Image 1: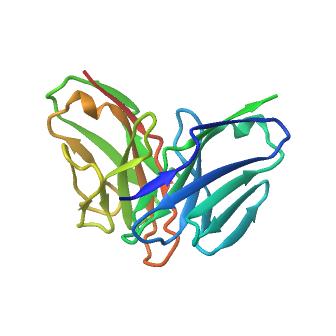
Image 2: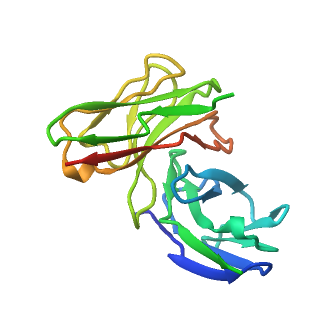
Length: 109
Length: 115
């Protein structure tokens, strides 16, 4: 079966750094996505990794290890507006996205 | 540009009734998708279409049907609604290329309650 695991909820402090982990077991791999979803809104694209290593985009970075079936999203200099759910998704062998349940990130002042 | 629009925003529907959720995109994307999102679960694919005139079944297609008569529109129909179809429904589109990133863009969602 296909499975994507990420923590249900995390709490962090404004201005700090947080790492959200994602492990996956899928039939094939054609890339891994991170999306941000604020409560009551649609998911929006954050990052895409298809090769091993770190992709940096401003305050957000995403890392991938295909051999370990593992990715993380790193958020630096946290702001209150970063309070949201972060969704990990893998593009499988049929080019369909398999989604994790999401990690709800709570930012405290 | 509008991107992807969905209608209605929300709806309360009696069990056994039929309903069509509308989705329109103006990005000329070839691929479109319908997902449902339930608390504690990831987005689950209902149906998809890689190009106009073709559709495919996703992970949870039972009770739903779709059509793709043109590039822009991808309606989702519930023929006879049941309470388990209470969910938030998202339509998405992407510029589908084999080997490409296929980033998906999402509509604002339709919140459906079946009583």
